[in-house]
Every structure is written in C-alpha cells, then in structure tokens.
Length: 128
Image: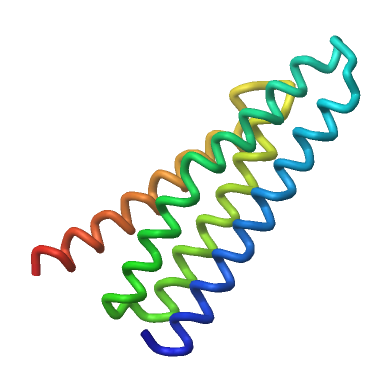
C-alpha cells in the first residue's frame, strides 16, 4: 500500500469512527433523560447507532482490502466519502418523526450501493 492509499483509508475510518461515537453519545443522552415520553426517540437513537455499527465495519474492512490489493487513493476516497455521507443521511433520517423519509431512504440505498461496489471490486480482484 502506498502512503496516499493509507491516508485515504485512515481518513474514512477516522470519520466513521467519529460518527459512530457521536451516535453512541446520542443514545446515552436519550437514556439519561429517563422520560417515558422519549422512549420512541431513545429507540430511534439506538437503531441509528446499531444500524451504523452493522454496516460500516464490514465496508471499511472491504475498503482496506481494496487498498491492499492496489485500489487507488481516489477510489478509496470516492467510496469512503460516499459511505460517510450516506451514513450521516441515514442516521439523520432514521431519527425523524416521519419514517420512512427521503434522508433515511437515500442513506440506506447509497450505503447498499457502496457495499455492492466494494464487494464487486473485491470479487473481481479475487477471481482475476
């Protein structure tokens, strides 16, 4: 791996770690409120954090393997940046009163597209 690939990967791992941390803090914030009226908001905060931890790690591992197999820093940045923005959209959308909403749907669909791009790239690299 070249320095540019490592730097790109480090940036998106760091950003997604920060997002996961902020989502965890949001869960704690809702738990400390302790008001039963906020139970729905607590559940939404838990789902936003949980959903992030379900998708992001495996995609980041995939980006890491892509970097190890020679993917360019630009490719890592495009996929990593798209993933980060998609996860912000999803985290925001899943916590809104109106569900489903455009932010949640776009965030989810774009996350899946990034996952499919990473998976397809790795499969092609593994076969070829």
